[in-house]
Length: 180
Image (cartoon, rainbow, N blue to C red; front, side, top):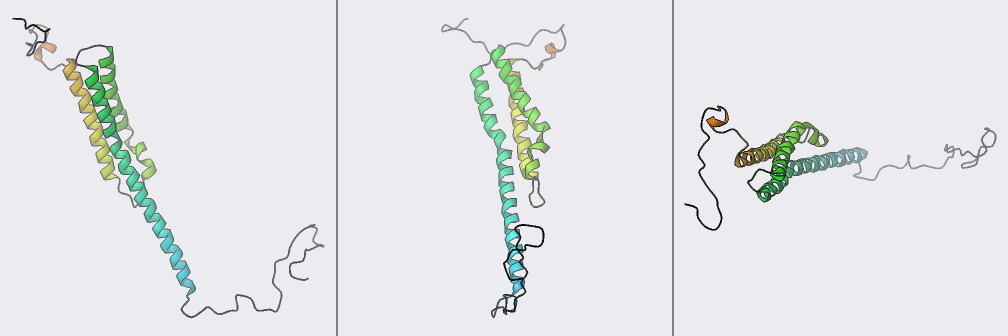
């Protein structure tokens, strides 16, 4: 059978036989040029794949640090919202305060899930995880501070024992005219 001709007797209407039965020299018979080593191609491929793995590990580490720093933005936004809510006890300030408490708690519960996409043998996630935890604990402290400024934390003995007189107010506020 000639090279490249369709095989008609095999039951298939269109099939091509790619076996090389010719006597012409093929590329397998041509020697390699001087200085060329076939093993270097394999080494280049392994070096290229190693570079790709290193680049992927660097990308994962960079993204892990970005995720770890994300609570800082939330911390600033929550601080501004708490400042805008004021220091009086009303529905809006209580809602903002409990939101400021709930977000860090839920983020701290899901630390493993947050950093799961960046887990790799070459990527050290201890630093980003510690920063993520520290920033969320800072957000939690901000929420507890706001609870204290609203007077919703039991910080005096009179908050626990009803027979004690309430704590003295340190500061008074009034209108334009001082009241004395």
